[in-house]
Length: 413
Image 1: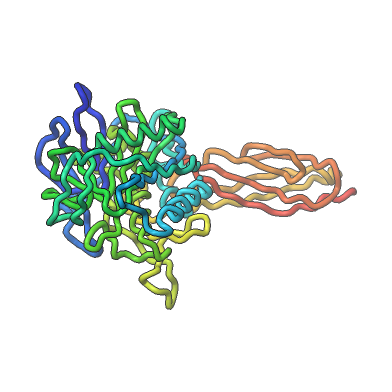
Image 2 (image 1 turned 90 degrees about the vertical axis):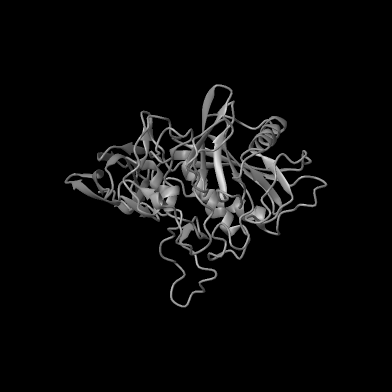
């Protein structure tokens, strides 16, 4: 859910995911509404989510037409805090896999392109910018993690302190801050946080409920998400299946949630409803069917395959379907060819494509001989006899791709 807090005189959008609802009005450094940290299998969603939902309206703000992800693992020197074995590599692998499958309809990220601004779709077009292991020591606690409703962590940083750490790392490593760079600050078990010093909204705890992650931007316009340790029993749906057998598995679902919201509503004024909910918030407890297969273990089940990796991720809201969905519906693509008598090396091609949730907007051809073409109808003359693998790639209006290919034989006569 997007909530806002005041910085000087300006309102800055902060899209929190997995937080608790409060009727309080937004005020300086206070969040005005939150979506709850929901335990696995819990049915206690707020009424405004349980009864949802009309489609998300467009508020006029920007979307990200492409994004480059960076992950900062904060492992403060001398703190005694550390990441679990395999935690960091699995999160990196996930972001690399997400980037590798860009423009595909085969996973939940392929839904983002239906959300647009005046410049085009929030296309599933991701690259991986790398990771940083930050060992900057902890500043003094800026807040207090709730002992009863939370995990009882003794370390607590405010959002201002977390922002400062992100900015330190960016400056020290000279990392890019274009309008398509997004940063994930991932913290280890034991490092808690609250939205501010007096807030009851904290990582996995607080009288208003806890958050499993949120996204925002700095005063200089850097998009970032805070991702606390999620694998705490009774919190953040951490008892869901763990296909990689890792405590990072529940965290990865939160990263997916925040990533999709940063792409479709980076500043809290694009695709968001009147209650402050974004595409991830509306599907907080929707995970869809397992892909474990007959006889598969439900403790290691997965529901998304991304570049060969198996993950258990929440679904995202689709305006095109007026419901939560695990992935975009696949486009259909094929092509035919025509030969002309007396012209053995000349072929005419026609693409046949359809999109069940939108429309096709482009076709690109590779003829297998180093030359290319574009358009639904193309013709091509092959200079040398032989067999050629002709490839066709279509693009739909969400920015997703589909491929079709066939081998053609060109004879001398």
